[in-house]
Image 1 (cartoon, rainbow, N blue to C red):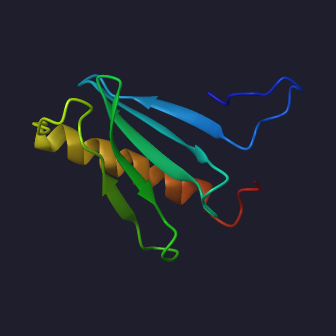
Image 2 (image 1 turned 180 degrees about the vertical axis):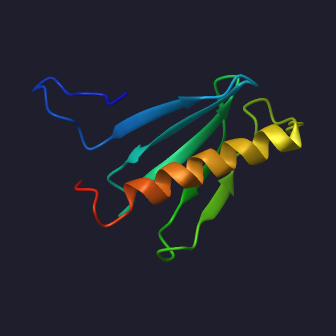
Image 3 (image 1 turned 60 degrees about the vertical axis):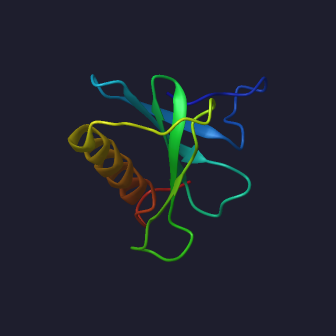
Length: 101
């Protein structure tokens, strides 16, 4: 899904949603503060991590976010790994030279 602004054109923040049946949701798109697209990973509608590629073409960085209530995350590791892998695949696709942004 791409969120469109009032003009009908895509705003500076474009989001593509990927939903996992295990409670994870991934949005991938552009934001003004990053040169390359980023991926946000949510679990039950709370942000868990942001993945960016600002350090280089094949160098992905994950920023883990604390829970809103301050408690520790307890996530199913294979499901979280799957969400990270899906986010990286989508970022690689968006950052490929043949994709026009």
